[in-house]
Length: 391
Ligand SMILES: [Zn+2]
Image 1 (spheres, rainbow, N blue to C red):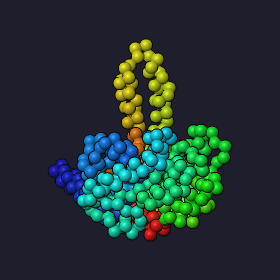
Image 2: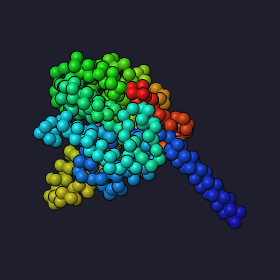
Image 3: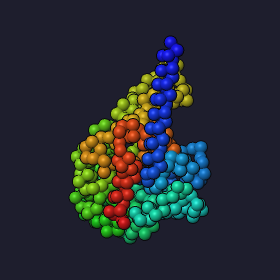
Image 4: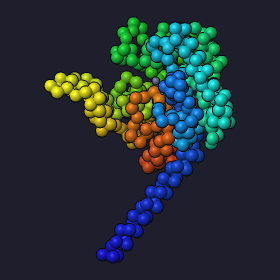
């Protein structure tokens, strides 16, 4: 009895040592890697709401303190405005306002943030106490079909342009519209003007971002571009078939082009089951609650729906499955991280905010990924594409 107890205690002690060892190893590789996230919406989601992202916030997914806790080195800040501009002056004005807001943060907190607009600057400025900030403009509508406005955004340090957001523009159609989930479009893909935009981005060393674009726009852009492309926040269609995700042939085309696909953490792009549950509770599930003879209060209905969604929330392992899928299909050179924090209404379990990136590294380590693979996935692949565009 006594002897068995010693063996059992010994076993637990040994397992604990092993698991602490594994944790230390993955924390080690997480710290030693350059962690790059290619998409974060905190400029529109937090900063324009008047929140100071240089201090620890109780709201949202990101701020300086939490980024550093999560081991983040380089953050692409999304410059985003929707289908309707925030200001009467229009989309381009909205874009400049957001870029100004980022520059103000960097100027006020030079000890916490630094700005980069090229591969060399980004690499040089990586620092354990700072977040390197880069700019990505999400939505071609912000250039208002005007090359001089495109040039202004380039001059302001734009490192990528997402050709469309969910809305199509005059020269490129979106995934939402091409798939039939949005507006009806007459002509799919890039117009001649759109192809010129891609060439201008190539010449200026701005990465062409193909997240959000329709399949025809995707293939038109791949045919025109002379540089590797990026998908800053998209996941895998085969695992979660929604219009924002990319199909196997698109993944193969990105690999042939030498580009990179950065996985979006949004649960409704990660888990098919979550999509179905969400669809049910936003439609028939909610309707049936409203039809009850003793109708629950709006708060009670909300609690019922949120509980059902939380019970079906994907986790770290589901996100890792998307990385795995791309690695198994085309290798470990073409996948990265574009979590979409502060732009998503739900977050996976274990990846609730920017402090949780190490959980993903740990999961990759647990699956047997080598340190060299992990380094590529956490940032190396994005840096390679950045370098190929703007050294
Ligand atoms: Zn987006």
